[in-house]
Image (cartoon, rainbow, N blue to C red):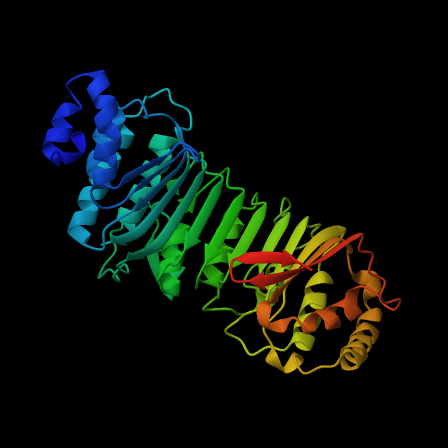
Length: 396
């Protein structure tokens, strides 16, 4: 019977008794697109789900979450209202609650200014004590050039595109992982965003989509304690030679395109000892597998110690016509060229290779390169091929 009632009647019934409310809560949440999962201990919000947060606050399901995912409206005015509902819920959290939400994902943030983005980010981290934050599809207006600057201002300034800008630092004390995906920002906006953040416990930085190399390097200068750097399907719109010398003594995981891997490793004052190295082919660049192997070797030559290596092979259709004999001949030439530098390559503990589904024939080439050879002094105790069919991976 409750399922036939209107939203206002359902809302009223949540106040009648605990027994009736326990029946009404799931129906009301489903109507309002507030999706709770006991299996994953997560909460997903979109549409009118934000209005139902006060009801969830009173329900028996109001418990610490592993993950909170919020997708805001594309309508700016409605999105501002949704954010207010979210802040009101955060403000009501128990003051002694420690990490009420472990991971927060905020999607579709269309702000009038960077200050609005930073206020939302800081409020989220401060009120939930979350450890992981993902910001997706964020836009904000670029800061206009000021006509004049007050001499009374004592805030620190940085130079962006030849002009100085006041920086107001946003401190995120509890945060350990920051993931930024699908940002539509210019290089100067990336500078504004990253230079405004101070994250003393940050262990992992992950960026998807286009970004700014110079802004990232400037950020890493202030966050030398980072242990994981992942640039996933990420292009640098201002890539150049390394603009700074970096000191990243705790770096253990590095992922990106070859030019990104080399830029990071060449900027370090000492040879890093990585635990995991993931080298992906750039789908937007014209690349060939034999050239890609050279790039992988160049990246490895900048590493020390032992490393687990994962390689995503480019989809080069010109390799499909190779016979096994051709592949072995090409492999021999590659091995001869790499032999001279083999003593500078790190010990490879695990080698994992991802192939596009269209390139099954290329497996013969890589087998020739890394398995049945006595030319290259690779010590690979564990080796496996992975064929990539969309989002699924099959061992071969």
